[in-house]
Image (tube, rainbow, N blue to C red; front, side, top):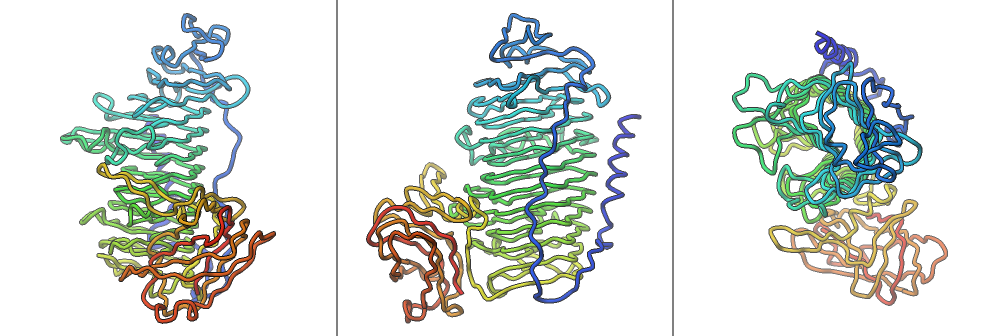
Length: 606
């Protein structure tokens, strides 16, 4: 009965905050073209004071210290702490028990696998004790995770740092634990550097390196797929992970034969921040009746992803409010050559609201409404009071990857209201709305505005490190073949809103994101703002056409040894002549007569 009451509480929260799909939110916005740009936000994530979850322990408390502990101890006091996570993993915890890891200590080459489960009223607690930095678990090994919860329920994990492994925290429900689990609470975690270097097969689907993964499988013939109720995840930062959060998907390298997905029913996910996630920032699947809010993503998608990428993906979500989402920068690796969306309704979503959010600096579509390959459309979708700014910056060549503010694939339905779509590229090249193997006809459009200006293409590096990713080189291995795409410089980095390019010799170049698709007949001026810290007096601007990839180039005189940034304006009619035709696919910049560091503040073609 208590479990049902808690689930009903989540449902009540949903009813209070999620509007019906055709109700909309009251924003009092005028419906017009153009106008003043809205005030930009800086994200919704908020650093909050940590909760001391050691106070939730009502049973035995076990202590672990890599510095002062000894596995011969009983672990029941700070002075008799265990030393290793291996030893701590042997303790079978009961409801109300807890394991505390000492702040400032580090565990390397181990996986922590707590044993036992609690209840919502009397949870098992994994937390920290003492003063100093978070307890750090790192370098668990290839294909290994720092922490694994294998069938645990009624459990809180909080206050840890997880680093430099295949996975940070893996939660899995399988076998006898496939169904009927209650209460999983993850909070106040810092998860970083979960990358392909620790992954034996990074190009195999469902084997992506992750910060946190929630995975489960259910017998195909089971009468229920209810894997978990009451899931809480909040106050978590992800840095440099291939995907921040992934779940709930199936366990294993591939989809497991004769098994299907398990669902999560009743959840609260809030206050997350992800930076530099290589493939996705967040990928949420098979979750119902919950709220997701105050979630930020910065500069994701810089690594090649065989399965397409986006910053924030949802699939098979039902009765969900997604609110206060901030996405700044999602990129389409040149080695991938398609996709690169900001927010993706991947399919099978029902009664989902995305509102009060800001999405900007997106290589592909700002929002993609997809049907997961056919016949799995999204029903009753509301997109309300969302600003999408600078979309379709580098949108690939596949027909399914054309850039747009909102892209429609399939026959989903719903309403789009009170939204603002802002872009520097022409509506002919990158429209606010685009149908690609799909239709807009089943959507209602109300009180939206589209803002454009005369720029055909621009990069201003305001996004800092994120925008650098589009100009950096990528080493990519696929089916045994190693490739390099993009810039060949000694170094590409970012600082204070500008790109730093270190030219080691005359053959090295800085390369734009490929396939920028700038229509040359519609522009007349190239503007570059840069600071030349070298003795070079010329740079070569080399470019190629999209349809007929012939190399063309011209030189630009620059001031050597600058003390400040200068703006260089180039008359394209003069330098291109009869070659000023077609669509520019990409450009490269070489230093003609010098080496060293050049700082780029912006590129504009208009």
